[in-house]
Amino acid sequence: MITSAYDLVKDTESVASLPNIFLRLDKLINDASCDLSDIAEVISEDTGLSARLLKIANSAMFNFPAEIDSITRAVAMVGTRQLRDLVLATQIIAMFDQIDDSVVNMRSFWKHSIATGILARLLASYRREQNIEYFYLLGLLHDIGRLVMFIEQPEMALKAIAYRIEHNVSLNEAELCVFGFDHSAVGAELMCQWGLPRPMYDAVCYHHKPSLSLNNSVDAAVIHVADIMVNALNIGCSGESDIPPMDESAWDRLELSPYVLADAVGYLDQQFNEVVNLFIDDASCQ
View (tube, rainbow, N blue to C red):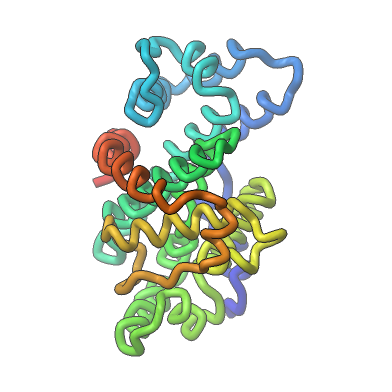
């Protein structure tokens, strides 16, 4: 019997481990003796991934003045840890391609997640965070627990949606009533199973309630604000029918002027279709 998010995730075989290429890159990056050519060589082994990363490096996400024509140059220009995070972001979508659209509209789900990632990346750039691709990855992953629920317990996941509609509550409240835990907890447990850094666990776990995160995490606050903005803009579907309430302490934690919000929405409008094409259409996730 499943009584916790941990129980649900520990038996998940279809997404039990991270892609091998990401693990190899992570090991290389943490090896002080490796150089850019070592990292580029690993990426270049996968021609499809290499082509997609070059498209991303030459896209509006980076807007470099000159064309990036090789993986070695992409690593040099984008950064090793940043490119590693983009590698994982490009492969996450394929990991969940077994979910049937009759259960959940995957394109709509990924549109919401990608838009959240773009806005999280922009908010992080306004804060001058060092690795803004990390925030894009967090945005892409923030609702990943929903997909694990649909893979492992599709009937209960659909029951939670029906409960949300019938009782007019938020999705995570409905999940708590049906499962005893919500998708944020499931996503966080998946981060643990994958061995990803603790701050990623924290951001995913508390993206609905960032004030409860460890040390009032900036990561959780960024994802919270970006998620609510995307819901307000009605881009894709997060499973919610209404715009979730903003945790005011999260906005205060970002220490940003409210004027950046209009700029962020403008940048999102400029980048969204291109990024969707790169991360969904190029991955043949229809």
